[in-house]
Amino acid sequence: MTTATTDPVRLPPGPRAPKLIQGLATVAAQNTVFTALEKRYGSAFTLNVPVFGRMVVLSSPSDIKELFSSSRELIGRPTKNLGDILGSGSVFALDGDELLARRKLLLPPFSGKSMRSYERITEDEVLAEIATWPEGVEFETLDPMMRISLNTILRAVFGAEGRELEELRTLMPAAVEFGSRIALLPEAIRRDLGKWSPGGRFAQYRRKMDKLIATLIADARADPNFDNRDDVLTLLLRTRYEDGSPISDQHIADELLTLLVAGHETTSAQLSWVIERIRRHPDLLARLTEEVDAGQSQLLRATIQEVQRTRPVLTASLRRTRTRVKLGEWVIPEDTTVLGSLHLAMTSADSFPNPEKFDPDRFLGTSPNPFAYPPFGGGMMRCIGASFATMEMEVAVRAMLQHLRFEPTDAPAEGAHNRGVSIAPRKGGLAVVHRRQSRSSQNTTSSVSAGEPGIS
Image 1 (spheres, rainbow, N blue to C red):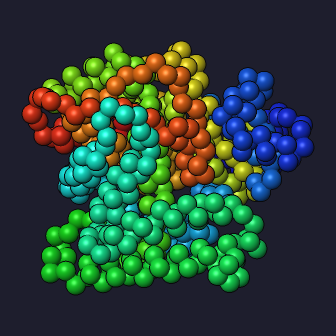
Image 2 (tube, helix red, strand yellow):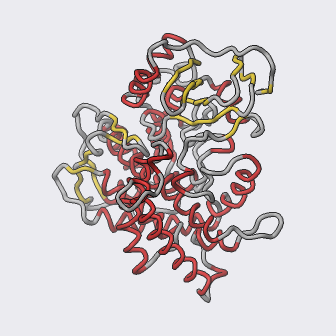
Image 3 (cartoon, one colour):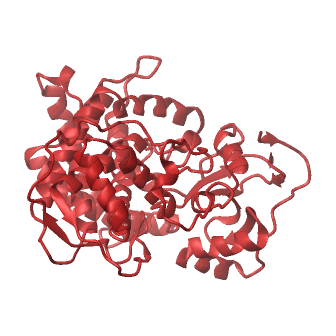
């Protein structure tokens, strides 16, 4: 258990290279660099990098558990995050009791009856998208997956339809991409210094987004069917804090953008990785097709879990110490960044025998240690939309396998490309598909579970 302490500082060992060199190496090839450092120093090491300064990297399940379950008075959110871009009402900008209260309001919309309606929206978007895919020629799946994810989020989360939906489809991707590029720049550069400055350009995007979201909020409130709507925006308008007060409209706008940023590119990239992986395992591809035709989902869920383990789109979970703390065997000073390495945790041979092998069967009939397998992070900062993302991936892959035949390939595995928000297949998740001439008839969403596959 992490505790406050006055003991002398005791940090894990680490490289002595200059700060800039350590920073460049980490940005250029984080997984490769962290794997090499783990082999040299063990499951905990210390880096010194620009922007974040001294950083303690942890990856053992016991240390990850302590990090995720630490008191919010001892360890909180890092100061460098997307909160400055997404607004003061975003969960990325909140900490401590404020964050806890907001999470209690955000979690219910992603469970129960609402999730079933989101399944139908996801299936509609998948079927509309794959109807346009070419047959017999190789193409990148990343952009199509991004369209599926974006449209699903805009309809299920924003409640957007008609003109507003079309405007958001154009505006949101550009705004998210630009915002993610400037998020970690110094504050002076992110300030609004006119329309040609980085901060000024993003301010223009944000004003347009806020105007559209204000229209959606007004339309939802005016809807005679307001009490029966199940989009996330409306659910947030109806929800109340424990003292009876509502979330402000501006904070709702901030949270909707947060859900988009956190769920759009990440889910899209993970779906492309699923295609990239199963095409290189023809026996698995055949088994998955047989399973979905039989209306089952166990192997499908296990496959998605194994893709998340071996090809994570998010590789780290950041925290910052509020005071000097004892975490495991280490004593970490105040105001120090602590990074839980999701990649190292999920590729540890101690938790996953033959970790380099792509083997979905390892997840069949088992629930992995949530601190050895945390693809959505954990604790107070675990991804709010984890169950939504899991549902979206299951519905999308199932629908694709029911309607399409993917050609296997013996091409080398695609490398990883860091897009800022997520890590995607370097070649875009290439695929060759054919329409299936006959298949078992079943409801593509009947066996979807909104539950999460053993994640912390």
